[in-house]
Image (cartoon, rainbow, N blue to C red):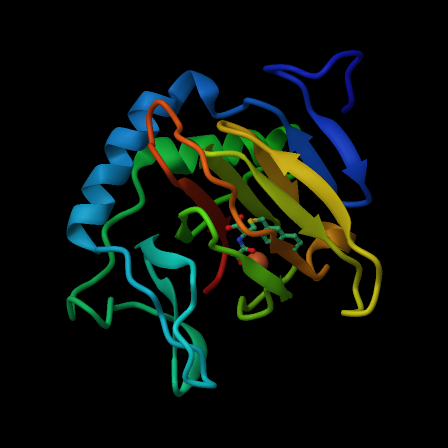
Length: 212
Ligand code: MD3
Ligand code: FE
């Protein structure tokens, strides 16, 4: 599943359970961003509050059958958006297809995510080291799609104290995290200043999950 050169169409196995598909989302970026606009108008980005009472620096929303939410009560998947009181917007067919082709390239056939968490970073925004463990079944991989400004991703180990590896991620890059990588600690370094031609001064990350 690796190739001789990095570029569109490549799938590089970076580590056990980590597949990197550089520019995999690039051919669809305009259509993805248009679909994203619809999601953001139905379910606006918001800074969720952690159980400890602090507002997260990443602004978030969701589409799909449920959405990841955080408040004073804790982290969970909820079928309704607590801001609008309505169901989250449906996952666009293009999102679903992109996640499925990426997962298939990484060896996960028939991936059908039910949640897409949308994260927005502006310069200075960071995401501290954490594990994703609010999903019901860790056998399903997570697929992440980076759009907009570049970022440095931190990939740690299964213990918080394990050393973290830095991965640069650019517009259109896709990663598939499954199997032995599914519970690795990870985070994102503070976003640097910049202007992306399509997204301006921000980075949007889509993470697809099978959560329910
Ligand atoms: C590695 N988001 O939403 S996506 C998150 O760029 C989150 O917005 C980051 O971490 C972002 O929870 C990183 C990549 C990602 C997602 C899940 C993982 C990497 C992962 C699960 C295990 C290992
Ligand atoms: Fe995460």
